[in-house]
Image: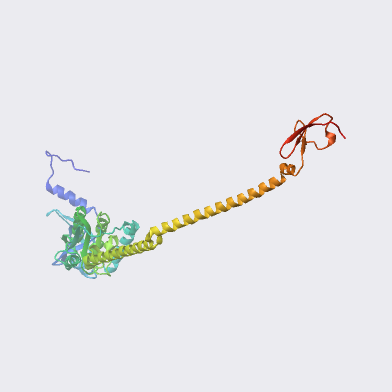
Length: 402
């Protein structure tokens, strides 16, 4: 039940502390996981500062020496441990702590098993899917670099990038790359670079180290922050055989910091060589095209119609003259044949003409209606007739009929 208090009816500090202590006492015993930030031995107890690597909060743990010595292997500063403890609130000092009942060091095998379970869980969400990955731009305007303070990884990236492209620009964020503050500092630097509109690609670089040293780069909090970035992220953590979860979620995985510089920054000498090769290829293509067109034009010009246009006209003129002469000969021959045929036909007509027969002494007898009398029985007595001779005609009357 909440306390009913007011400015007129306040409660003393001891009451508040007692109530807080009672509430904490009801929590019971809990298992707590964290990283040992500080460790000191005084008398029969070991005092630990257990830190959460993500939230950057810590709690004081009081561990009896017997409980601490029973842990295998012996925990040291930076070790990850699991503590079975009872929450304790000291009313006198108003402080909260954990009284350790059992302490277990998180071994490499258990760490790897946890990482594998986390990897499968994140993979099932699609965070490692190839279709999510983006390629960095060909030549970034500004490269964000997250690395350790004065680290060899920073020198490798900057020197190799400058050697490949001297005018390349970097925005460097130096952070802790191991220890309890690594996750939070790397994540904050990542978000700051991602918010910068000029940054086209982000490199997260760290040199080699043990599995424990590289654990911050497999933290779920950092992995999800990388997955949420709008800027392409290049991971260059440890050596080639080291594969933290950051390598799986990043858009590009580089085997080393030097490899990261090679993947992000183009080599100016290679680009110049490529440009020279392309120019040479274009020049060859153009020269070849011009040579083909020149050969085609030469071939066209060598044809008679273009080499000597007048010669073709002359040949055509001669052909026209020849055809005209042929036409005249054909027409004259046709006229001669027609004239001969006409003369022959005229001769035949003359030979077959009745006038020719009349000139041989024959005559044609016709009635008044111009019909020809073919027999004496066809005329009547006293019928007028016309006798046509070769040169004239005679009118007669039939006087007798035999």
